[in-house]
Length: 269
Image 1 (cartoon, rainbow, N blue to C red):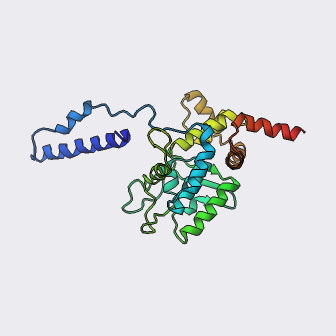
Image 2 (image 1 turned 30 degrees about the horizontal axis):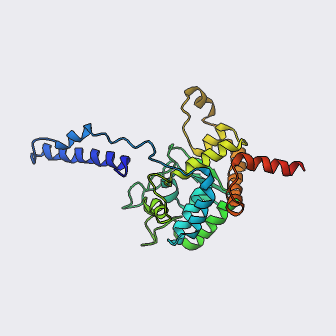
Image 3 (image 1 turned 60 degrees about the vertical axis):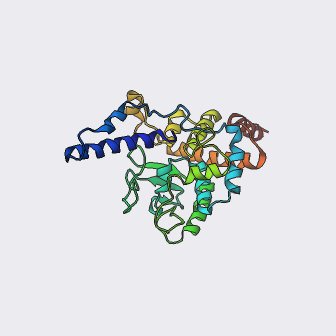
């Protein structure tokens, strides 16, 4: 009911457990296989996102949240760089170059004992470059001060070694008053960023998709663009996005398209 992905994984595990029981004579029938007929598909709005008009509200609620300071910074950083949950939670400092303002997500990370999926890197299983805006770098410097000497960017506040839980972000959003099944979940940050970057009209679609770390579905296009990084454009893109977030927080919402046009009008005066 709450997570189609988790339900599917649990069903697969149960089928394996019952198969073991059948093999060693504990039971005669794998009853778990009867669950294969269940519809465990995700609901259509399984990764909800707020309309862009509510972005200033979201930023203010994150900053006013009464939860752990590291969690708040992680959420704020998530808005600025819109990478996936596991890519952010399992980050190590040796991936990040603050002077160069660049974060290189590895294809695979070193597994931390006892932490499931902590070896996950970039979802597309190849290194992914994330240019860091001035604002993202400032947030990471604050994170560094809180984390102390840990090699983990976002260690758990419970024992200083484990990472933030996969439920941390959505728990925080619920504490802020959001329904994570209808209003917004952490993955919704990506949808909001993608929508705004497309609407502003400043950047090529291929550059935006590269920054989103999306796989090109068109094989012909993919054959020509898979090696292109569009890095110069993506650096400009990430800085523009951060400046947009800062401005609409302090001045109120303006659509990405009008924001760009207003900037152009001021430059032409």
